[in-house]
Image (tube, rainbow, N blue to C red):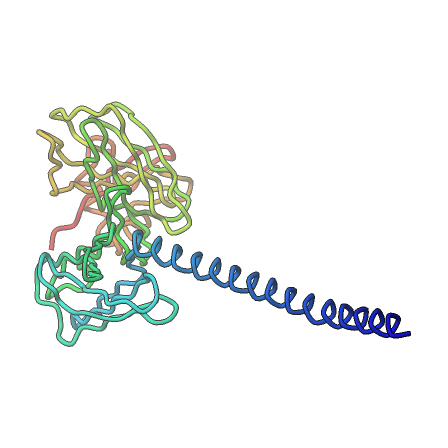
Length: 313
């Protein structure tokens, strides 16, 4: 009986021991697992932060210049860091990005007339990070519409970012020499228009403007020669032509603007002058510029091509 009692006590003790030890072991194992997962999360977060710090991207998203010369600049980077806005090599202003990485700066005083070159910088105490993008503002003090904002980087071509106004004519805004044998020409005309490029009278390449009216032509294996650069398009029956000299890796900024009109049924010099020069009274200017084609100003014929002169102020 005594032996049976001792055996029963031993079995109960073993049962209690098994019941108590195994949950503790499971809890310890679970705690170790939780600690391991927490360490893994912390490690991933630390690696992600380190990676972000090693690859800080500083970008310009919005640059606006109003008529008074005040500037608004906004951009994006990683959250909660200081961003210095550089004017050349000098710090113009400093801002802090918010929790989403967005930042904005509004100038306290109008920009002076001339050229401003903007870049971005962040210093983390050990390393300096600079934006790959650069902004150039060409401010014409007395001509707001002529002021230009350009954005460029080493990996992309120059872009004029304040050319939002559509035009019905033809313009060449940028002639960019990309490398030893590549030239990029950018301009504006009406949306979805065919633009053709010539050297003297030799056709080189064509392009079609996008829905904003912006056209681009890239010339590879390009050699500068003393030729006339000619850009043409056609708008409402008028052939519009820009001509300028190109020489010694330079393009003459003084363009000659020419227009040609193909006479259609029902046209008269008065109607053509009203449509192309803004008034029928200028029909005599068209006549004087095309006397070889027009024997009698009252008699013009479909299919004739007339040059439309530029009126002098």
